[in-house]
Length: 288
Image 1 (tube, rainbow, N blue to C red):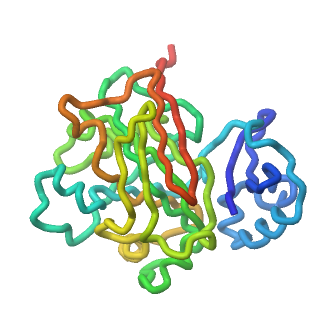
Image 2 (cartoon, rainbow, N blue to C red; image 1 turned 60 degrees about the horizontal axis):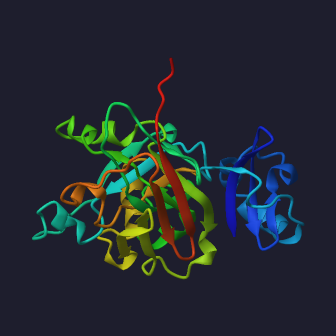
């Protein structure tokens, strides 16, 4: 089942995408004010049952997409997780022993079909297509053997990055990863029961129709279950938390000359079985 959060008639609501259209679950589950609240209450099965039997309320084009979980407690991102990305960093001789981890804020991402913003402080806005885990059940020190039971579903991220700003700090990339609406998440969350396995998902990123990234999760250094186990060792994972699992080789910074995003560009991140996340690019207009 596909679950999404959207704005319609000035109201933020959530629902499920079916073959008939979008079923408005906010109306049918008023005790849960958001999809995150549904996850926290362990009520996703109830939401699914309602969606499967209810008539549609909206067409998919009759709304403004928001990130599926617009209020995550944490957005945890993993760097250099595809095998051939080590080559981009001249480090192909040795696989990493542990994941590279950093955080994003909810304000740094927008929804499907909403513009990515290139800030006035930089012309080096870059794309990074990624698969995202949505946590559905709280846990700490989760064994890999049970990690799947803590994942509610999968979605997509364009983990937009300001390349010059990630070099401002010697030991962190936080600045370049958190400009407002520099990235995106969506278009929806696909529940885990739709996937028999996680190691056969193929991710493609296109810019203006040109394929820039193409790789499979079978090439991950750290599979999804390992990431859940590792991260939950030092912090509790809670319903609605997002884990962005890394991007393949082919980001704009790695071309000669670099191919950074410009206003008017269109970026698409696609994984069969999950969907297609599409965003245009605009220059941010600062307030005042």
